[in-house]
Image 1 (cartoon, helix red, strand yellow):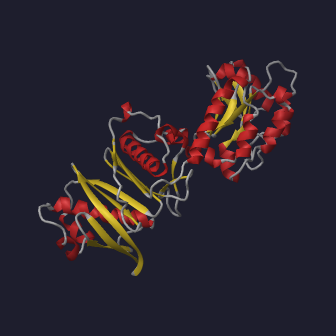
Image 2 (cartoon, rainbow, N blue to C red):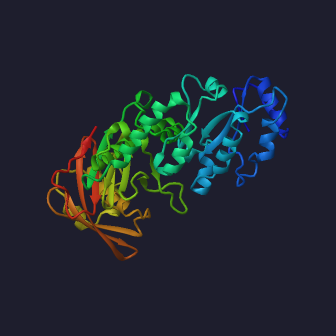
Image 3 (spheres, rainbow, N blue to C red):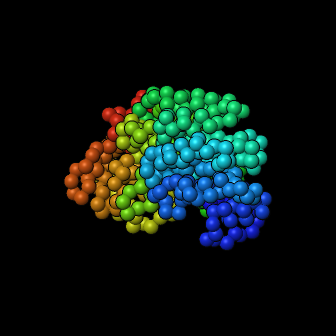
Length: 399
């Protein structure tokens, strides 16, 4: 059970009715979370819900009923609360306001919320709430339609406007095969967070102070690159989330945007600068600041032939950073995520700052790549892709 706006703990293991009574004695609100969802063993069943809904005690009643819970949705990859919605429609007068939530699990925050006007306590008490799915590509149109039938009339203009934004989101198409953006971050305390989805905002709030600036810069860079490729305007950036494909044995993985799973994505950041790449073909990006590094690192990452093909005028630290970003961008593009002992990248300089590369995995030829390196201020940044050639009109988006 969820108790909102209480100031003192309520002891566990009471009956549903007694718990609700104690919530209301503190002038709190009592919400039934993920009700009737049998795969969570402590969810309220029909008996527990009705013991409150049918009570004749004036202190025992529901203020809200959770009819969509993204935590439960993640378990089934669908709409597990269909039974809860049907139950709510059957007993609507006795179950309080319709509630949408994400159950506070970090990777789900922001997939669904309760919408309201003015202030939430009054909206719940007057049943003047609705449910919004803020990552619409995750769910079916049928579900959105079902939930929006419960939306109060004065929330409908917002629902209609949001529906138009979703249609614009899904109308975005691939307009060019490669997009890359670089963003110089500032103080995260002064950053404009409006480009984040609510789910991303939840993750951002879990970061340490030292992580926030680079994380923001790289996510904005990836969304800018996505906009360059698809034509998606910046006002729709909050409708898409940058997620990670979790790999076996890891807590992270390569980035992706679920609104367009057929594209390829890569991101990187170094201190306060973020970089993102999006392409119709495999892509990798990397950015590194030139700093003093061990003199042995250059010989570890580059063969004598690779070192010899570089132009003079670079000190050892610049040279190692330049070659490192090239090989790291290519390694990211392969999405293997392994040590360089298993993944070997052989660079062959073509003209200027462009390279051809052959990638070997555990001694076997894996793939061929094209790469390009750029030098800007104290940073080297590299782009690797598997297009036949870099598009003639390609340009990095700097911000």
